[in-house]
Length: 137
Image 1: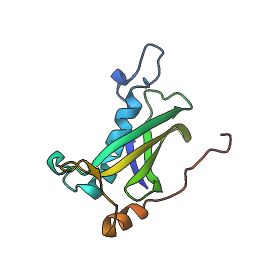
Image 2: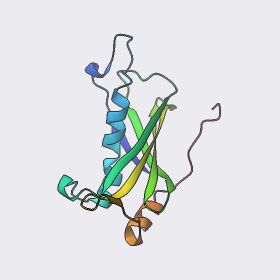
Image 3: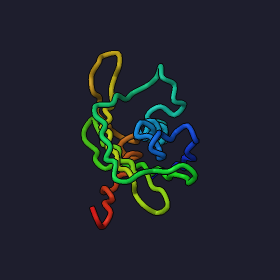
Image 4: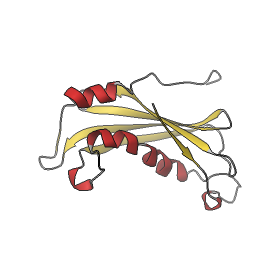
């Protein structure tokens, strides 16, 4: 599991006084950089080997300005050429958001999915774990 701490800025809030729901996809993408480095260590977009196939976020509770947000990132499914990245946003000990993103190992020249094998597969397996669900879910 990878963990990143996000300090919400005042501009991340909306008229309702909580963190705007549009910030989560951006923060989740930032937190996926740790996994992206397994594929492209220097994050050079000319060497990129991934595409996003799907993204979903469950908004379970509000996030607020003034308290750090911990984003936990892990692999919850590992297929032949695709995998699911699960991300949790936590604030003050509560999981507030749960996101799932399906990524595909991809060859941009041939426009085809590529099997995840060898050291790359082992690196992803090191971050494979079941989805954490809160007791009241």
